[in-house]
Amino acid sequence: MNDEVQQPEYEFGAGILHVFGRQLKLFRERAGMDRAKLGSLTGYSASTIASFEQGRRIPPPKFIDRADEVLDAGGVLCTSKEEVARAQYPAFFRDAAKLEAEAVELHAYDTQLVNGLLQTEEYARAVFAMWQPLLDEALIE
Image (tube, rainbow, N blue to C red):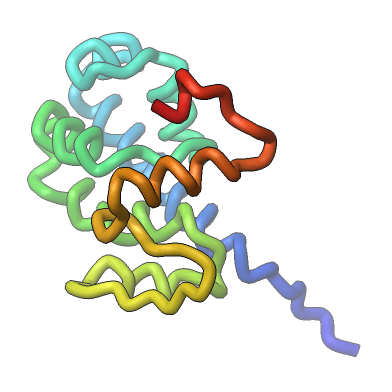
């Protein structure tokens, strides 16, 4: 019998969020700030800062940059930015998300519609007119 506990794949993302949160809290306390003060300096509420510190929410890159600056973390928080951003994806999709971020082109094969900027005004109107549930004329225009 194997006594080793198997960790689900999705917990990797939670792990990096908890590590980042502990670092954020450490730097905040070292700077002598409470959550409300850090929140006011970064544009977030104290409860959102608490969620970041507890690993319950994924901090956006602009917050990480600003917190690193405000807390004088010397780039320590910024080094986790890429891994923190990847934590929002399930483990099976992380490699695809990384490739997608680096992509310079997107090729799509659609047999049922013409995508985006290739659409004429008439074509776009016809697509929206067939939308289910039906849209009213004002919304289509």
